[in-house]
Length: 273
Ligand code: MF3
Ligand code: CO
Ligand code: CO
View 1: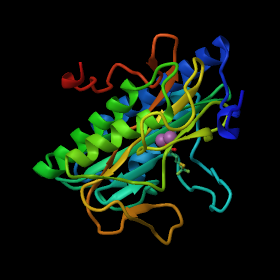
View 2: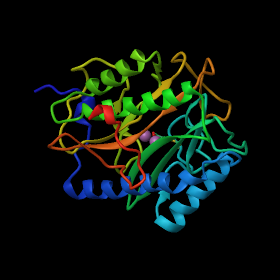
View 3: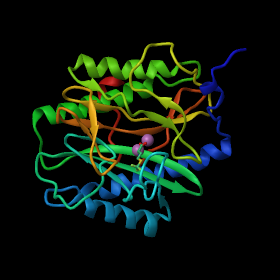
View 4: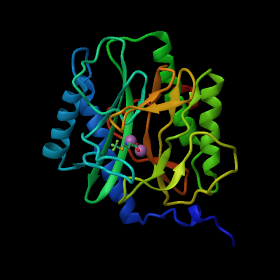
C-alpha cells in the first residue's frame, strides 16, 4: 500500500512514551497557570521570562526547550519562553518593554521532562482590551478546539486545517500560513506539519499514538507576516493584531486526548459542546 513519505515518518508513541508525554504536557500547562497572575500592566516580558525560567528549572526540574534552540537557519533562541504582544504573531523574544492595559499577549511554553517535550500557549488580556482584541482571542481559541474536535483515528490532517480556516475566515480573520503545528516527542519539532488551513480528506491519515500540536495563529487583518531583525520575532505585515493558542494532542482510540492540561487551563468553549 502506498504511503506518502511524510505519513511514513510520523512516529507512533508507545504507551510508556505516551505516559511521559502526559507528564511533560501537564508540566508545560502548569507553567502557564503559575505565570497568569503576573501578567499585569507594568510587567516586562523579560520579567515573565525570568519567572517562568526559574519555575521550570528550580520548582519543576524541567528544561526550557526554547533556550538556545537553534533549528537550521536560525540563531540560537536567547530566552526560555516566547512572548508575542499585540501584532506579534509568534516567537516574540522577551524584552524590557512593559505590558500596558489593553495589550494581548501570547505566552508559549515548551518544557522538556525526562527527554520528552510538552508545548502549549495561551492568550492573556492585560487589564482589559478592545472588543476586537477580545473577539480575536476568543475566535482563535474556538479555532484551536474546532481543530482538536477533528482528531480521531481515520481522520486526516486536512480536516483539522479546514475546520480552523473555516471558522477564522467566517469571522473575518485570516490564518497565518508560514508557521504550523508539529509532531512532538523526544524532538521539539517532528513530523508531521499540522497546517491550520486545508481541505477535508487531504494530508496524512491519523492513527492512534500520534502526538502533535495544534497552534493556530489568526490575524485580525491580512495573513502576511514579516520577521523582525532579531531573527525570531514574527509580526503581521499590516501590523494588525494576532492571536494564538496551542495544545499538544494525542490521537487516542477514542478520538483526541489533550496532553497539556492543568487545573488553571481555560475550559473548552461552551458552544462547541
Ligand atoms: N513553542 C513554539 C512552537 O509552538 C516554538 C518556539 S521555538 C523558539 O512550536 F525557539 F522560539 F522557542
Ligand atoms: Co508548538
Ligand atoms: Co509552542
